[in-house]
Length: 180
Length: 180
DNA sequence: CCGCCCGTGCGACGATTTGCCGCACGGGCT
DNA sequence: AGCCCGTGCGGCAAATCGTCGCACGGGCGG
Image: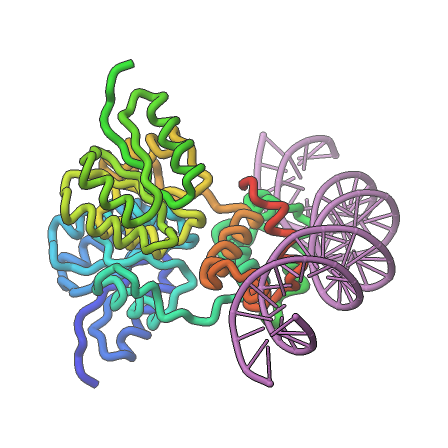
């Protein structure tokens, strides 16, 4: 397999970061993973990757701050920002700080690479290749999973954040699991 | 009232554009309104405003395209992009094209000015990352708006893509319009 | 001009889901 | 022990959803 570049995945979720890095390796990239802001910055300085994938919310600091510092030190680095939920305000901030693109978890390697490609081109009309729009139920399920994960599985807290009754969340969780 | 600058509102919804422009005028701005891409470009060339507020979806063209052309002709102009639904991808595009900020309708003058202020500052940690998990209803609404947009406002088609009954979509659209 | 198809808006009716109450259990505190 | 929280689940009224149906309007080919 031909080498297509060097990529660094920075996320304090080690399992996720390692999995993503391995997926990039499988696609021919020289892939590394780092677990947190400090580790990410250090590793980036060390391996000088062409591309960095940075999670926004990390325990030891802000991914945006890391993005800023990284691009200050290595202006040619291309950064794709990952986040749990797509916040427009944060997306704007990340873009202003030089991110190539901004996508939401759960993100797999192909989605990141696609975002990288799209982020390189002119941001104009090519709105997007138009995938299948997810059904409402599907979108709801994914959003619930995202928030739930953010609450470390705490159903009561997730229900409060989602603005629905705990009982309702329980029922949704017991009903949906199967298909889309 | 002291003059605080010149602002141009560009939206093909004349009522909305006029109302917004008048609100700016009430706040001391020299305000103009233009109704569409062509009219917007022409008027901008004419009055050379300090700030432009551009709606994204206009009948006679793309607000993004207008943004690009405007900033090519007048690099110092500050542009705030307005859109009906908050799409992260579009927000990224607008920012790359030089928009100062990006906000969703319904937007009143104060929100636009606030966005302008915030957009001018360094986009850093100040207002921390996105620890504002959107409520389920909010996420549902945004997803619906996105798909509806993809369908050019075709409710029947959107309902099919969303996997719900047309009647249900109609009811949701008639109920939610408010916010949160 | 007339069907025909499609999209839209809305009323009505059961079927389903949701909101909100309750209760019981368990774990981690003080 | 008490207290606070989170969890799972039953029940019941209220809201919502799915599914009909009907009317209206706009293209479009015959």
